[in-house]
Amino acid sequence: MTINIIELEGMEFHSRHGCLENERKEGNFFTVDFRGETDFSKAAESDSLSDTADYGKIYDITAKEMDTPSNLLENVAGRIVKAVKKEFPQFSSITVRVSKRNPPVAGKTGWSRVTITDSDK
Image (tube, rainbow, N blue to C red; front, side):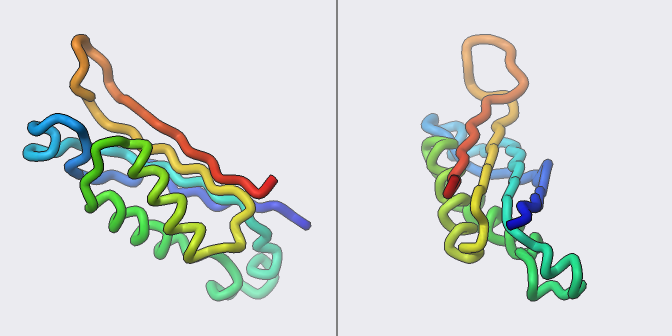
């Protein structure tokens, strides 16, 4: 089996994830990166969207999950993985990274991030 990779990097959202009241009220900027492994050799030959995982649908799934507030980035990333896997069970591996800009910590930092990988390997 040939393993091929579909990626969507740098999807940007303004969402209301976080444990603090201000994070839920004001929201913050987030970036989501998606990586999925599957065999799309049939699509490489057919040139048909029906023979591959539609990354437009992957974006829509991600946007829907980013619109649902969570306390933890782990929960957001896990929900995205689960929802994409449900829509596209042909993925042998899915990795989702959710990054929060300027997280509320006691010092200067650009991002906080979590990465979840679900793999059949």
